[in-house]
Length: 157
Image (cartoon, rainbow, N blue to C red):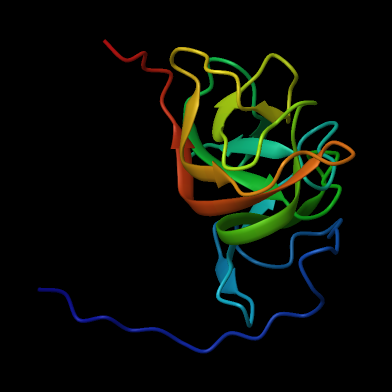
């Protein structure tokens, strides 16, 4: 059994800020007072606040799209270049997540061909496990519940 260690961390700013110089090691995790969890990542071209992204093992993001594989999160700020750094939510309630028109309350979440946006239309292999819609879409945004989401591009039998 491993002994666990840790340290109290204090972060400057908040999750809506964009860092043009890396402030923390990529992959650093932080919590807000509501218990939501975030991970510090490198941005991606066209990465708007609320965009869905997949992350590789180096915490570099790619806008989520059909046939993606890997960990998934929601950008909290406009990390719209690979020279930007900031926070991506991976656990808890999010109220800025981008969704396609017609997304229904309590809908399952699927990748789409529109990069960075999800839908509730069933697409084989593109279910985002660990995420659930918790409101209907309004102006392209929904509330979601995140529980370390991921996608693996595996179709059900």
